[in-house]
Length: 302
Image (tube, rainbow, N blue to C red):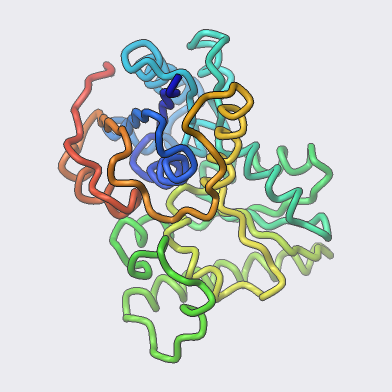
């Protein structure tokens, strides 16, 4: 049976997780919900975030028939995963982005010291630090609040998902001014983070991208970090975890295609938003790497 995968985010950054999922399971059915009417979640209380996230989860499961639920939102993954699991039948696997990201960091790190960049709300939750500590890692987190608006403004490398990173890094031509600004902002954040790590006696060899907007910055990040440091895309890690669950259930038409970069044009996809449908359609294609199609407006209440 072809699996139906529901993907939820407070906005549209989680489309990077959806992109990674479709590349790995191109024959699955997907329903994506962006709760754009109530973002940003990071400014809300834990109780409110849990209520919003549970309502979105029930919509995907009860109205869209999701058999797997992916929480492609770091804030909701950090603060509301238990509430989401309680809101849907126990037979529905619920996968966030934080635990898979920490697991990938554990596999990648040789020193046991990890850096995490994320939004302020995710850093304040210390969810990545806790997930890394549970795996024997020392993690140092830093909020990078300017990166999300720069990504949404489009000040990133052109078509970052299809770039050959080594070839891009070897380019002699200067980056466009907008991209150079974003690259400099990241370098400042990263310099502050590595200086703090050194002051604590850490020897980090892994950087976790703890925000679903950050995969669009991967070429810039790869240029800025040391050659021996591995950047972990938590969107890719979450997609890998979901597909392992699907494969364990022997669902047909799925497989590990981690090398895939392009989203198949014929993927079975329905997108929903609670507000700003036009903005979702315009910006969503940048995150998904293909037109998102007609986004349907839904009302989940106040």
